[in-house]
Amino acid sequence: MTDRITLTGIRATGHHGVYDHERRDGQPFVADVTVELPLGRAGASDDVADTVHYGELAEQIAAILAGDPVNLVERLAQRIADAALAFPGVEAVEVTVHKPQAPITVPFTDVSVTIRRSTP
Image (tube, rainbow, N blue to C red; front, top):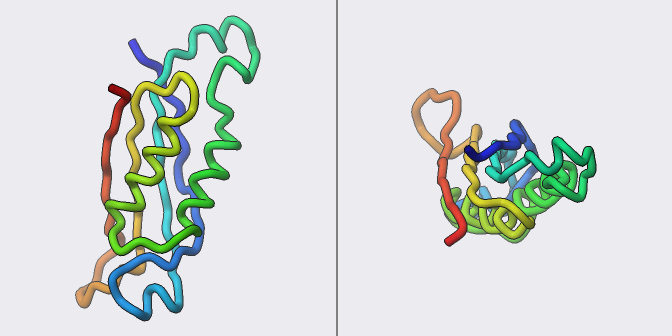
């Protein structure tokens, strides 16, 4: 059984999108990330070195959301997944990136992309 750490609602302004105004003006992006890893050792040791420091993970996610622009939310999600998988012990990650102000011409609440990646 694999354990999970979930970060929900990490927000940052990014300049991602295929349209010039999206890149120029920016808009909010929100990420939900769940990493899977064995947490038994951390539970026994009570030492942050035996787990993923979720504060550091959150900072990396926010930096990616606010970082170098990409065209697609799918690419943004992949960047976040790659960063999460680089943490020691992480075996898999699920990333949802929300783009609540996407340029859609009909009323909507949110658009999001969810990906799941794992170590080989």
